[in-house]
Length: 242
Length: 72
Image (cartoon, rainbow over all chains, first blue to last red; front, side, top):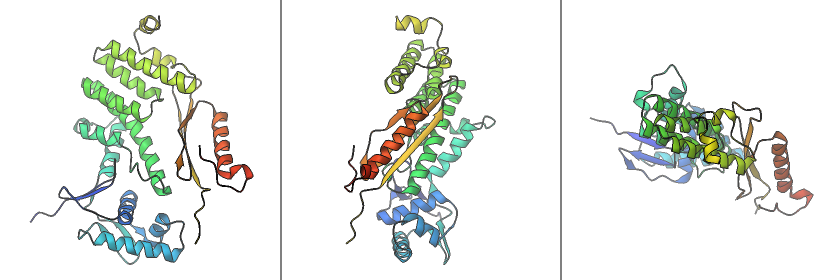
């Protein structure tokens, strides 16, 4: 007999699925599941209650936790492992952000071969923010920012790896995602320009340089660094400016 | 019934250093007061970030007045 595959999506938005069918679950149980998934280790009930309901009394927070736990178990699927003292996300729940973080770290490790993860799915996961509609809680904000920082670097690394592999179209797509994540990062523009140049598209490279130049001028009153300018063939920038 | 205070806010600083240039400091400032999220700010000078944080605190505190903070 095959067991069900339970998946928890936290990138883009929350979704709990069992064998690819979406399971309806109330918001308080969603928050509990997301919190436990992001902790990824068993936590004491007191810690979970205090983190999820920091602005209420301890008895109220504990009651909220019991209620949310009950609602999560009402789904009929074993998504939470709970003991008297501790609770955790069930070990066999597949959490998208765990896999995305693993792939990001692999991309950032220059000694790690990554051919198997240079995929559209990796790019999509690294292009998404973590629970972007849940910015009202401290624990979400911290996790969101940590993932945001990680994915900025990982997208740049992915672009460089795809360029080195001669997969220019995919490299450009990853580079564009890196620039979208932070339009003022010159390192993101740099890997994208290199991808265009490797594909032989000097015009696209110059166009991207101009996007960066205008963003820096508009937002910060700065010119691109010499390092970025020197990526382009000599004379190209001057000719375009003229 | 206890009325929730509007005097709460969130300020996030995303800071990074660009390589290959002397003026390498960058900061993106994300701010909210109560439910109102302000447009992000970006700076390349540390003092500008300090000023932005001070302005946000002043706004949150209502510049010493008793009324709720004025959203952007």
